[in-house]
Length: 425
Image: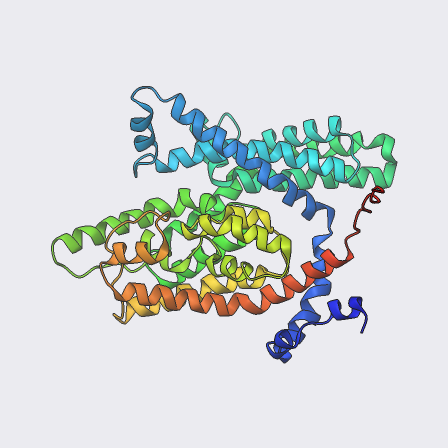
């Protein structure tokens, strides 16, 4: 048997793990995933999103440094207190939105061969005109609109502007692409004059989440939305935080007060409930990182080693941006399904009394197996968290195998640079 054919076949050990479901999944998923992953807009979003985190860090740093008084420690505590957390997030993600808008416009222009001098100003003009009308909105309204929906707005505006330039190029030629820029700016200006704000519309679209209350429906919807938004390049937890965090943090404090008085805990869905749902971060990705540690792909294993530490403290940006998980058709299904299943098992376990509802707020940066016990003061919470991690592992495993096989195929087909000939002794 030739080396190439041997390398293209799975080992006997691998084959014993591949049943009909795996083969069916690979046949159905791989062709679609490959085509989807090569779309220019998808590639541009994957390239631009990591750059936008510079804006988040810069925005938060500026917010702390420009605070009116107090030491940096005091400013930090105040900024991330329950009373000012939403404002802090608004500032940070407003800055992130602007950086994402700029980087996405530049990357799209390069990938689609548009003039950068035309694409970037047009994108910023449409973005500015998508804000609320100044006669009906205060400066605080602008900050709230961007803080709540700025990332989504930046992506929508950049793609719409790129689409307008593409249409003009196909109909009028490359030399008259500026007609497309004028057209999309004109439409945005007309909407602005009619007091139609895309930013306000996007913000209003997520406001009903704050009225869902302490229900399984609320838990499931918030869980799925956080994961779904990440899949399209939007920081789901950050986008929803301005709406849902104040509500469920208040319910968390109600539970704490009831616990301190020896009363039954009235609420199941509180902030710390999500510790059970998102081991490793949104999408329940701790099992994904663990599975990739055993990958045969050098790239995937390298990413897993870099991401495992942050994943333990429920920070999965290195994994989401490194694989990437954004617009990853191979892993989209488990990224949505795993936390949905974990939300269901968690709610049922607490509803029937197998595990106490969280009485205390515990930051998500505490490792899951420790955080759930601190939040509930119930050792059974540890058992539930272990069961949840096991369920998520089972869900991720077959999809990780298909993704790994595709990565290995890319590595085998990647051209190898010729080595320099050895010099004679």
